[in-house]
Amino acid sequence: MFLLTSLVLASITQGSFAPGGEILGRCEFGYQRVNTSCERVIVPPHAYVSPTGSDWICERGYHREGQACAKIKVPAHAHLNDLIYTRGWECDAGYIEREDHCVRPSVPANAYANTYLNDRGWTCKRGFRLHGDRCDPVNVPDYGFLTARGDGWQCERGYRRTASDACEKLLLPGNSHLDNTGHGWECDPGYRQSGADCAAVQVPANAFPTFLQSGPGWHCERGYRQTEGICEKIEVPPHAFLQASGQDWKCERGYAREGDACMPLNVPPNAHIDFSGNSWECNFGYDLQGEQCLREGNS
Image 1 (spheres, one colour):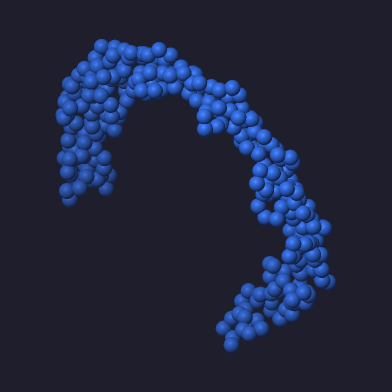
Image 2: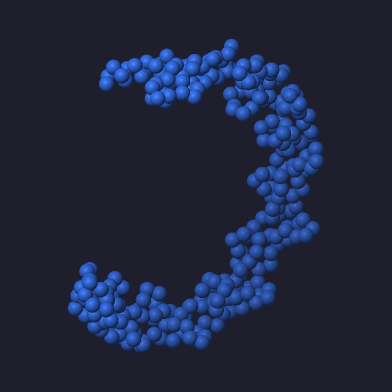
């Protein structure tokens, strides 16, 4: 067996094929699989065998054209790069590509050279915005300031932008405050917007005002539930307790809700109270048949 295996591997190494017409291993470094044999990789000038050992790669400064390596033509003011799927060169800093050449861009007033962020080769300075092929100043009105990008503006907190591109002071009605944007307002808790004013919410007994602008504007206290605009006390029956919400009740474990009362569970033999605590289920190995738990297979 050892002798046969050695002969098979030797045949692969020499570029032939094993008995049965199938290669039983990988070709050696510098060889590539062609059908059922290993053939030497033909490396053209200015190339070397790839790390996989089954192909070749052009040297730096050359790119692949068919089965040969052609020298990369680097224009003036450019340099080689190692990026895949490119022509193999890129323009130097301060130059942009124009029809296979690298030229220095013409930078207009109020701009600076920038060949990385766009194909123009320049970017407007802070406080100026792009308009065609020039940089126009950003006119910031009173009570306004430049945005983070520097090519626009917005009003200060407590002011809002008008149709005429000015910043107008917000007039807050009584019982209101600025919203999160700083350019609008909302009513205080316990008040609701009514036109341009904030009207007091009529909070019933056993309730408290909320911050929500939707809904009635109030919420019943724990132990009370909303009923036709008032807060009605929740009557908790024996063997029950208020739920976490405080707006309803639930029976204790071992009891089930029937109308407005909690009745004890009637757990049959071979059953147990389930995870809810308010019902039961058959033990493992028993099936529910009617109101009984019978061993599986019995009927």
